[in-house]
Image 1 (tube, helix red, strand yellow):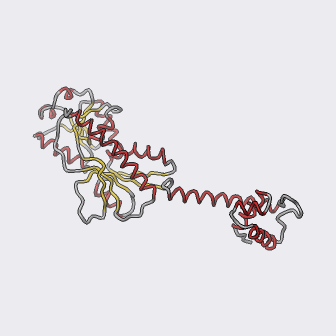
Image 2 (cartoon, one colour; image 1 turned 135 degrees about the vertical axis):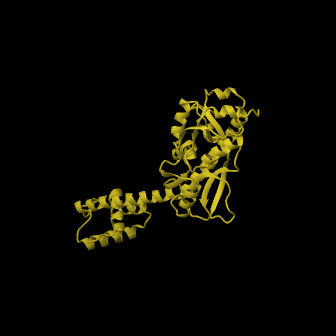
Image 3 (cartoon, helix red, strand yellow; image 1 turned 90 degrees about the vertical axis):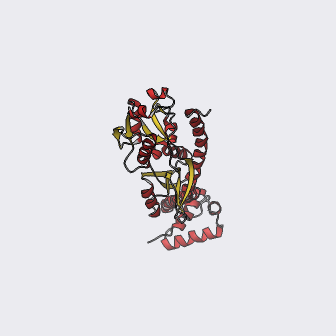
Length: 316
């Protein structure tokens, strides 16, 4: 025999509060409606749910057992309502974020952690990729948001792009590097030290080539290649190697990784770091909340990086 879950919830409320009127009030129902439910339920079951003539109402063993199930149903319903409300407010859900490895590891992971301090019930799934892969992932709805450097978007692109930082690369080294005593280092001096090459296919790999070509360097010693940001920073800290990195990453790790930027002003591509999303896409509210958080973080970061930039390049 199937019992209507709503009837069990009403039974549980009456048992909990000891009277039909108080149980009805707790459920925002009328007393006659709840009374009818209990009468119909007893008739259908062919069993009494309350001891006759007792005030306050005392459930029979069967009534008490069924009321326990009603309480569980009511609790589950309340929990489901809380989940729904939390989802609508962006406090629950899953956000899928893709991005270029160095920016995700160097900048975004900290911002995501700070976001989850205020939205602990939101799960963030992170993946890596470069622009072409991220665009494909957005179009296929495998990610909700991408963070990457972009040169230019076509006018009719299906993507929207919000710039969060102007693109600027620097030559990075450990903060005890001999070249930090030079202002700036010559091409010959730059060529005399080993270099770290970013992962093949990354924007930074092309930037390294452009940087060295613009400086007039034709041959350099690539000593280490294709590693993660963490591995690059560890290697950099232990050697006198040089590497081209985004200035924002160097700024973020200047203290904890003991690295610095050389005061060489290098050629820059017209590129900006920003947030990519599908136009007119209906994203979960948690995605919008995370986007707003990232924009606020980058707004604060932009001013700090600009001050650091002026210091490094002797503009103040």
